[in-house]
Length: 313
Image (cartoon, rainbow, N blue to C red; front, top):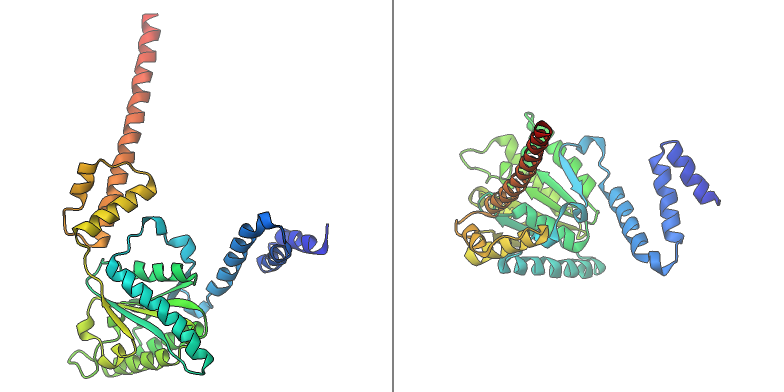
């Protein structure tokens, strides 16, 4: 047994996860066997991602960071041609921002998604993080707002201090919660300063961070804040052909053999993406519930037969 293996075992026995991860990384990096290459790379990726996702105490409950490899199901996600075009544009902007950084020019890759609730804006952001192999940092502005607006500005500063310089996809969801146009009749003086603070924080981000904003109310977003987003894209309800594609892909990925006539009916209502997903999940719930009921009925019937056999004997 070598020193690294001893260190790993000692760390595990002492419940020292920091030490255990350190020695595990050493073992993975030192393993040169071709047959273990994929496994080692996957484990190193997990360790790197965990390091990226460790949040300081003052951000817990405000910012959520996840590994999209664990939370995004590519096999059941349908990407429309509209969102496919936007994703390709974001990937091109990633390449451009890296080249500009080499020239000493800072460029933030930023996209604003807008549209009604349930059309898949957040899932699209998670898809981008998955495709780029980056952590997905999710910020919902309704959680950041404090009853004391001065604390809201501090929350924002703390979040952007953490994110700045990190390679990740930063999802700013429900940005209209604080990003309403200044001088509007609903505007509060202190809230206006929060909007200014948000814009300043966006301006100091580096090209390592991919920013995706999301709102259901583009009409009330401050124009100066909107200018911080290079791309503006409306996410709309899927059309019938897209709904068919979504249903086929989802049920195909989970291994559920749905009859063609039933599949066609699934695509009829003009649902949002979330509405369609809910109906597909309920279809699976009903299917497996009926299976369970069928099994219980067989057991009960078998029990009745056994009783009958004993009494007749």
